[in-house]
Amino acid sequence: MTRLSSYFVRTLRQDPADAEVPSHKWLVRAGYIRRVAPGLYSWLPLGLRVMHKIEKLVREEMDACGAIEVRFPGLLPREPYELTQRWTDYGDTLFRLQDRKGADYLLGPTHEEFFTLLVKDLYSSYKDLPLTLYQIQTKYRDEARPRAGLLRCREFVMKDAYTFDIDDAGLAKGYQNQRDAYIKIFDRLGIKYVIVTAMSGAMGGSRSEEFLALAENGEDTFVQSPGGFAANAEAVRFPLAEPVDWSEVGEIQVVDTPGTGTIIELVEMLNQRYPCADRVWEAGDTLKNVAFMLTDSDGSKTPLIIGLPGDREVDAKRLAAAVEPAIAEPFTDADFAAYPQLTKGYIGSVLYVNQQATQVLGEQREFKIRYLTDPRVGAGSAWVTGANVPDQHQLNVVAGRDFAADGIIDVAEIHDGDPAPDGSGPLSLARGIEIGHVFQLGRKYADALGLQVLDQNGKLVTVTMGSYGLGVSRLVATIAETTCDEKGLAWPRIVAPFDVHIIAAGKDEAVLAAAEELAAKLDSVGVEVILDDRKVSPGVKFADGELLGIPTLVVIGRGLATGVVEVRDRASGASQEVPVEAVYDHLISQIRNELPV
Image (cartoon, rainbow, N blue to C red; front, top):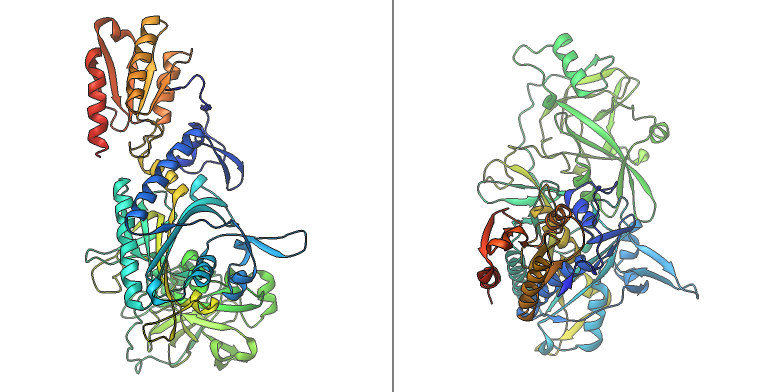
């Protein structure tokens, strides 16, 4: 049996200073992990036991669906990533280094290239396919702002699997097979989750879905409708507004609007100085133009102006996903100085020079400025927008008549109640933690790396691939985040480091003897038991019992004199007294009911 008096664990009474979410706080305080540096954690014995149980469950389902386990190194050469362009597309996210001979390497963020090359080296015929390979391995990504403990790290453990098929029909079948395996994994873990449409990002591919665990502290925002629409906020695409008749809209009118640096101030002034006879000006009547500087992976920079209704803000995460692998940052004062034709706070959709209308932003190629608008800015719609002159705005600016954008960009924040893009009802927003992501990669990596096999007719065809990631270490944090309470962790039995936590509460030798006897009996039949035999007060033991989060807590103390012990359920807090002679059978029955064979 495991004795707490000699086990490598130290609990803390104070929250770690950098803890932002409950899972981070409790995992550190309960002695499951220990911070080494920002985004880097040592796994202590309790934490390893939880992670190993998750790995075991994942392997069971991967093996059951026909996947075969391999393992690649974490240190990888540059060349394959050059062929797929991800050496540059990943940007600063990659950990890059050189060996003593000056050769470039990286710490693997993910392994599509090397799975592809492995199959290319060993397989050459359609008869070898379909094939599914997977690994459970440590990954590395240089997060700009690691936070939330294990939820956003620079080093993490991930399961990644890859399917290889001769055609698209095979890919669809392999994708569904892996998707079904993920459902089984997360169902077995007892996680409440949703499956949402997602962006493929730097991974590429034609189809992408995320598995999101429902969590108030989740970093991912997703939307869903009563009719079944579900998508990550970054993947939502609203339809372009229908054209409207603008024939009765008057000519552009330039008006003075001093001191209106915000949309609220602008709307107040419009209603005071330039009231409409038939309606009240609102924020949604304005078209604000927000300036960003795009930096591509090669370091080149391009100004980007985004026009969107004034009652919306640009969603930073949606924007980042839309422009990836480029990076978008708000214009600085230096940027405005470099582009004096853009007036800070008064950028318009139509530029004015000497009070005469000139070409629209998107057509002024000599300025090298891109102008993209929100899909709500449909042809014929009329707006109030900046005049590109300090303290002035323009009324009656019509899309299609007075300006035209280079294209559409759907990056505005989503509001509760917005109509679902598929017409399935109003959207509601919720938060989640990404725990799995599945992609139909198609032939992106096979094309780049030359993965071909002979088909039934003896002709070379390019293999099509799928990629399937699951965050193993992130699942530890996710389960902790969604099951903990105000007293500490509360693990479901399937991943708990131990099944039973026995507390010997009291100095009486009979108490310790009874606790040891029960622990030894349970241990002999394979029940994972931790015995708190420390010479500390019962209060300390009780506090640690709640903090560690073992599903069943057995307290042997004063009740022993009357022949009973206390059995507590950590998750529900329920407690009952059980006769000493019946407690073994009671615990065995409880464990078997919760962990059916």
